[in-house]
Image 1: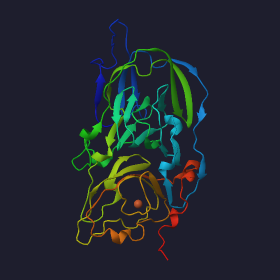
Image 2: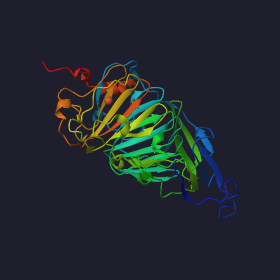
Image 3: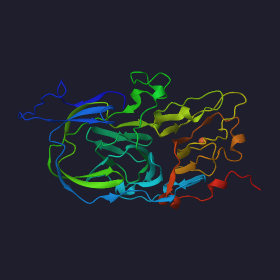
Image 4: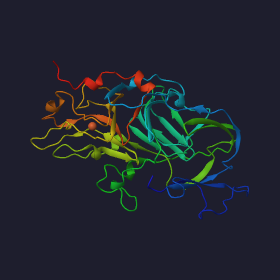
Length: 387
Ligand SMILES: [Fe+2]
């Protein structure tokens, strides 16, 4: 997160004595990424954050692959993923490669009896349905429909839902998730041509400090395993922190679309980047305004990237038979484009209400057994002319 943020109290000079009211010391922790080269924050704990009491049995979270080498365009009916009470059990991996795991989840209940962190990956949670609060040891972020929550690796968190009907698209990225470099200046500030700015970020707030001892379960995803540790102190015991490494939110509704006289390519929709994939937001916008423009996209061959689209709301102009919660996958190796009739039908239209999230990966995606359960099996042939 290339802006500075701070919450709570901390000493004026880093790495110096910071005394509690009783004269004992708070415990400093540098929380960084990419060794000591990436973004970091300095945290101050009531207790040493290292007090492991027990290590339980780990659970293997490796996705079960059904199609390792895919050439078929796919359509998945995302809302057919069954709701489950627990946030982690509800998460169903759909598509994976060595860089990213993309999944869907319909969790019903808040996390109350454990804390979670992903030590393998930065997480992106896109909230399609539901409201609540992302509670973290660096402060809380209220969320609602349309929010991206970006949670850098290692952040300890709980999900608190206000509702039981929740739908989440998530991505676990083995490389850090950043905003696009081309929209930031040398100092990291978002430039004037960026489709969003710092004011749009939902930063952690309302830091709550728990000075408690006891037994606190922490579930840690590492090397594809879900480890079970019991800590002797409450993980949310930070009294203050400052720095650049923290979770944040951004609403897709605050993405300002870039439009033009003729069809604009997908990079204008880019919202986040990693070294291995991009995340784009397709938002309601005015269509191209050249008198001979064709608003629907041209057929295109990204010969070396898989394109996953998650449909959120509105009519998706270039596709037929698509509804909210659907996923389409257009794999590398073959071109894809508008469905029959939609290319011509788009002419003369002035605006779209479509809302979708796209994840384009540079390596091919493998499909999981979960994905094949909600795959319609015939999408690949849906571009044929009707006889
Ligand atoms: Fe495409």
